Each structure stands twice: as C-alpha cells, then as structure tokens.
Image (cartoon, rainbow, N blue to C red; front, side, top):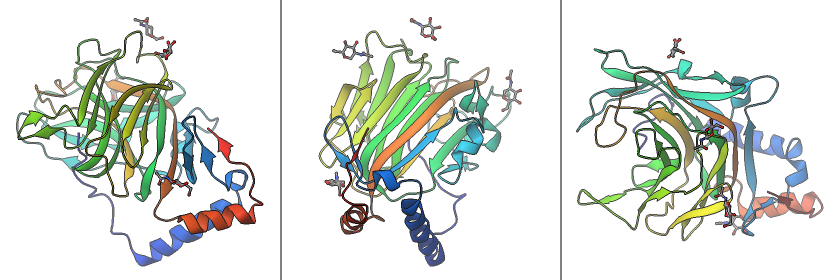
Amino acid sequence: MMKLSRTNLHNFLPVEAFLLVTFLGASHASTSTSCSCGYIDDQGHVWREAITTEFTQPSGALAALGNDWIVSTDNEPQSGSATANIQYIEANVLEHNSALGIQASAHTSGSSSVHSGEIFTERSDLLYGTFRMRAVVPTVPGVVFGFFSYESDTQEQDIEFLSSDDNSHQHVQYTNQPGTINGEVDNDAYRDVDVSGANFTAFGEHRFDWLETATEYYYNSNLTATITKNVPTSPSEIVLNVWSNGDPEFSQGPPTSNATATVEYIKLYFNSTSLTEAKFSQACSEAGNIARCSI
Ligand SMILES: *[C@@H]1O[C@H](CO)[C@@H](O)[C@H](O)[C@H]1NC(C)=O
Ligand SMILES: *[C@@H]1O[C@H](CO)[C@@H](O)[C@H](O)[C@H]1NC(C)=O
Ligand SMILES: *[C@@H]1O[C@H](CO)[C@@H](O)[C@H](O)[C@H]1NC(C)=O
Ligand SMILES: *[C@@H]1O[C@H](CO)[C@@H](O)[C@H](O)[C@H]1NC(C)=O
C-alpha cells in the first residue's frame, strides 16, 4: 500500500543538510568505525552504511527508535472501496512483549478513522541495499502489516501481510509498485506467495534486497520471490506500518480487537546518495582498509 503523505515532515532545509553531513561524519568517527569499509552480505553484495535497531535492548523499544525512526501522526483520507480513513497515532507504536509493537486498534463503530501505527526512517536518501526485520505478524483479521521502501506511489517495493488472507500464517504479498496495469493485477510486478512450512506468527526474518536490476524477497534467508519489473531508482525511506481502511478488496476489517505486529529488530544495510563512493573509499582508506563486516 502506498504511503500517501509525509505531512508531518517539514521541508528539508539547507541547515539540516549541513547537520546531517555533520552527523554522518560524527557517526563514522565513533560507532561505525569498525565497519568503515562497509558490509558484505550472503549474496556477495557490498553496502556502505547501516542502520540497525534492536528493540529488545534494555532501555526499551521506544528508546531504540532514537533519531533514526519517526513515528507517523498523519491522517490519510481514503476513497474507492475503503470504508474508513487511516489515522496514524503515536500511541500505536508501543513497547510490546519486550519488543516493538505496531498496532491497528479495535475500530469503534461510527468513527471515521482506524487508529493505526507506523514508523519510517528519518533518512530518505537510501538507494539500494538489503533491508531486514525480525517480526511476528498480527493475527487479528482485517489489517495489513507492511515493510517497504517508499519514495512515491510508483517508486515503492512492498512486503505486505494481510491478516484476513487465507493461510495468513504463511501467506505474503510482494509488490514493486504499481502492481496493476489498467486496473488489472500485473503479475510481472506482483507476487502472491504461500511459503509452505512457514509460520509468520512466530518470529522470522523478512527481507528485501533492492538491487539495480531486481528486488529479491526473502524469508529466513531463503529466496521467496524475484521481481525485475518496476524496480525503484529513486532515493527512498523505509517504512513499517499496521493499518486498516476497511477495504473489502484488500485490508478487509476494520479489526474488532487490537491487531499488533511485534518487531525484534530492523537491520538496514545500504548505499545512499549522501555517502558517495568517493567519500566511502576515503573513509575506508583512512581506517586502514580493514575487512568488510559480514552480515
Ligand atoms: C487497544 O489499544 C488501545 C490504544 O489504541 C488501548 O487504549 C487499549 O487498552 C487496547 N485494548 C486492549 C484490550 O489491549
Ligand atoms: C506458529 O507459531 C506460534 C508461536 O510460536 C505457535 O503458537 C503456533 O502453534 C505455530 N503454528 C503452527 C501452525 O505451527
Ligand atoms: C530454506 O530452504 C532450505 C533448503 O531448501 C530448507 O531446508 C529450509 O527448510 C528452508 N527454510 C524455511 C524457513 O523455509
Ligand atoms: C554499493 O556501494 C558499494 C561500495 O561503494 C559498491 O561496490 C556497490 O556496487 C554499490 N551497490 C549498488 C547497487 O549500487
């Protein structure tokens, strides 16, 4: 599902660009020194930067959001076959089972909006990478749990779990948007996958690798789908959300009790438009061309 607006975000001012560069510089000097030559993944891909967030840390899941993640508070008016708007509220991103809960609340009849939960990266300059979360999907019917990259409705790659889907404990939908042509499903841009033997209601790692020529989707390190159409080319942010708009053709619902996804970690390894190849190589050289970190 597309993320319709970022109305809660102010414009990106030059002074903030300066602060971002300063911040990147500082983080290189401190926390990420040991991976100054980047990361190498199980497919042999090299990534320059990382944002890793462990929600099970002692100071709590909300503290773990730090400055890397923003909690959404916007209202997304819905149309078409939807029966309600989506209202993201801060309270629906919460400490839950010693990890992060992202929730769509039990819907109160008569209310025009479904209270939903969403976080997204402060940075929107990510361009290619491997993006991973370890999570449990909501079991209450009538919601969508999404993990995706977003720049616009046509620059977006999605992992979506629909709790009202048949076999929802092993059923996942992957889409490189737009997933339709002339209102019909585009099977080159969309995959509806039943992962036999999987149990998404237990913790597992869901992942997408955004490459130049393909998006590769994984569950527990196993490739589940490859989509080569509509691979985004624009710098993007990463988003996690749980929402419902009552649409009988997609989310269904709204839910009649709180529907919560539980997230243990999010690990993003990526390249960005801020840390160029040249700046990265220089930082690696200054660090003594140390070994890449294996991920
Ligand atoms: C459902 O979530 C709301 C917050 O949106 C909370 O106030 C309420 O206590 C929750 N209900 C249950 C049964 O956990
Ligand atoms: C899936 O995992 C949950 C949580 O561990 C467990 O309660 C449930 O029985 C499992 N379901 C199946 C079909 O294995
Ligand atoms: C991953 O694939 C391997 C080899 O095909 C298989 O043994 C394993 O069960 C799969 N894991 C999951 C979680 O499906
Ligand atoms: C990411 O950056 C690394 C190191 O600069 C580079 O080798 C790699 O080709 C880049 N990947 C993509 C998809 O651009």
